[in-house]
Picture (cartoon, rainbow, N blue to C red):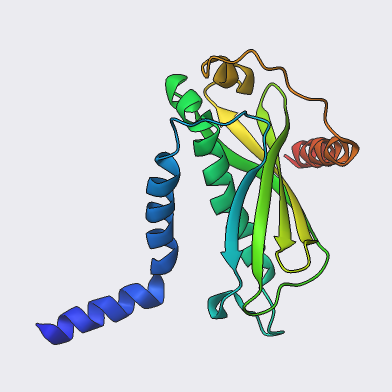
Length: 195
């Protein structure tokens, strides 16, 4: 019986990123505890991190995909902390990643502490646009910057905001976001022509 348990445990560890799911559950619980505080929607949300052995790639710095994964946790905190998750639930809506772009400026090294500064830049009739700045803590240097399009399904971002008892209007998109939106539109038109 012990051998079966060890084999099943080893298979689970080999096939599933158990640490990710454990962190997901713990983070969700911790961030949910702050629901009642609900800071302003457009205020920056902060999350801290450490570049660890499991983040390394063959060049011995943080793997490119890990930056985006850390942004997933930062975005989860932002959505819970700002009350957007509650607004989505009131609308019976869901939110999914509809696209992202990231610019790497300086790699994070093993044991580097970093902070992700996340904020909502803009929303339109279909999506929220969120910026993540990954900042190396010691030097305060922006190591990477990502823009993510979070598509709302089953409602509009404006109705989500209204369900949060807010009449806030979307800020105008900054130039880099305008270009990101244009890029997505061009890509969509190109892909539609191939169908």
